[in-house]
Structures are given as C-alpha cells and as structure tokens.
Image (cartoon, rainbow, N blue to C red; front, side, top):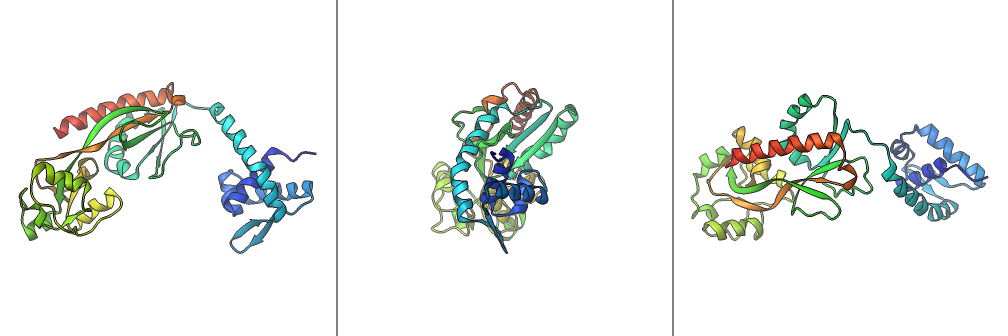
Length: 294
C-alpha cells in the first residue's frame, strides 16, 4: 500500500529542518501528530527514517535514500498546485522592508484601515529577496529599487532624495558646515558611491577616511542620531527623525537617489479587489508626500 501524501510531506519537512518542532509548526500540526505520521510511514516502509539526537533529528541511510527520491517530486506537485490556492479579496498580504514599514507606511496605514474596515491587512517585513512564485500568500510588495523586476508589474510611487543630516548635538558641538567645509567634518559612510556623487555635484572635498560605515541605511541614520557623524541620509527613512528633531537637515540641496519606491504586483494579483483599493490609496499618499517634499 502506498504511503499517504501528507506523511511524505511531513517526512520531507522534518528532514529539511532537522527538528520536529519546527517542522510541525511549518505544517500547522502538533508535534505529536507529526510524530504519529512519521511512525506510520516507518511502519509502512519497514525502515527507520530518523535518528533522534540532542539537537533534533537526522536522517538514517534509508531516510536519506527516501528523501532523495521523493523531495523534488513533492516540490513539483506543490509548485503546480500553488496557482490554484484559494484567495480572498478581503485579505491583503504585503511584503516590504522593515525600515520602510516603520518610517513611511505604518504611520499612514491607520487611514487606510479606517476607510476600508472590511479588508484584513497583513504586513510581512523582511530584507530577504521575495519569490512571488513560491510565496503565494503574498499579494504584492512595496520595494525600493530600479523599477524593473522580471515577471512583476511595477507601479512608481515616488523618488527618494539624499542630503546630509546630523544630530542637533553634533551641530552644536562642531558647528554648522558649509558645502565647502563639509568634508572636514566626521562623515558616516564609505568612500565612493553616494558621497562621491554628492561632492561631485555640490562641491567641497571628500575626506580621506570616513568615521564609520554600516551595511544598512537604518543603522546609518541611527548612528547619526547618536552624534557619531554626518550621514548622507535618505529623506524617506529619515523623515520621522527629522520631524522629532533627532536629526536636522544641513542643506537645502539634495541628491536624487538612483532608486525609487514602487508597488510591485505579481500577475495573479491583478484582479485582487483589496489590492486595487490599497493601490489607489497608496498612490494618493505618495502624491501627497511628494508634494510636501517640494
């Protein structure tokens, strides 16, 4: 008798995660239910598939052979069935960067919720690359980039701008730079890139070394808030910090970023009624934000 498909799915999930608890959670099962499935599979096959160890479970030689034979086939079945999953127009799931969620979307989102109480909105904040083909629970995304993502519709929301910013305490301690003396002040970032573009456009001399660099914009802004140095800040991310007077803009001049903000939509979501409402709303908010920046 062939083993049931759900038992094979539980086996593959456990093999990949190496942990019954995490595998059960990923399948929305209790640990006991998943353990029962695996024991039943072992009894049907007459083979022991896992060995328990202090860190979780690992495959036996027979378990590894089974995994090698069935895992790819189960993935193919799952991929084939994904487009047929049920979709509700009153549930909207969006993916976006945590920094954009905090600085721009979430402060405005109560207006959308109040105007559309019938729509249940879910936000998935992540810095990871999203595959809409695999992550079919995601209806759309808010992304910062060049504006072209193969296989996705990209709706332009607004551009982003860069300008030097510092904490009021740093300005009080060191004084206010001019465009010509900016390079004499402690700058946050790395040689080349955006700072080079700034000095090429507005003059002054770039420093030979920068005080510190971080691998994400949000941390750079936070370092500036703490008075570590001057950051070439992104206005979209820094606006709450400027509004709360934790950062201050040093110049009226600003440099257009190479990237802009977009709403990205996979083809399957084009007819999603909840997304259509959100798109109309977010375009209005983007237009109002752009007007306020000019």
